[in-house]
Image (cartoon, rainbow, N blue to C red; front, side, top):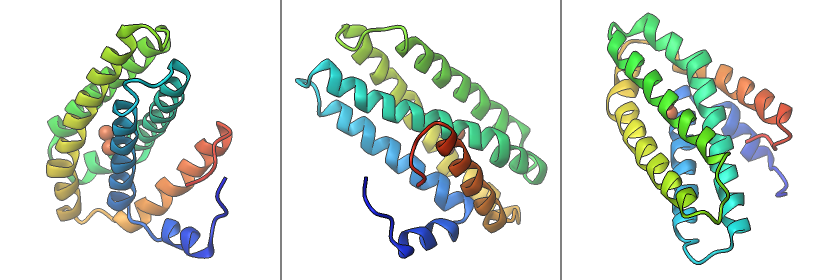
Amino acid sequence: MAEETVADAESRVTRNAIDLLTADHRKAETLFNEYDGLKEGSPEEKYEVAKKVCGDLLIHMALEEAIFYPAVREKVSDEELVNEAEVEHNGAKDLIRQLGEIKPDDPMFDATMKVLSEQIDHHVQEEESSMFPKARLSGLDINALGAQLQEAKNEMRTRLGLEPE
Ligand SMILES: [Fe+2]
Ligand SMILES: [Fe+2]
């Protein structure tokens, strides 16, 4: 486990909601790419990366649903935008649940990871090209929301035995 520097901690607390959520998206992409690079890897290695990305995604979706989406619903008059995002979350959660029932040496594990990464890719694109710009324009207090998201994220990660980030 890497030592956290003061600068790391500071950059964490000062991130606005959009920067924080966008950083999560980039991290998920990196982990999906890492998984892709494990074509010839052992089932254990694949499982470790899959577990990490699924855990991060579940936390990310829970944070958006509990804090960010309700704030967007209130400020941005585009109900469909948030409704569709929630349906996409449900689809991703269902795939993650299915992964939990497949052994990592089963070819269906790779197939499910592939579809999950494609669905997340689409969802992330929608958020970054549509929801986030609209949220920014709506006058949403993204700084206050960022602090709220960060606190809830650390609480969740600590509860799950993960290091804060
Ligand atoms: Fe997101
Ligand atoms: Fe989302």
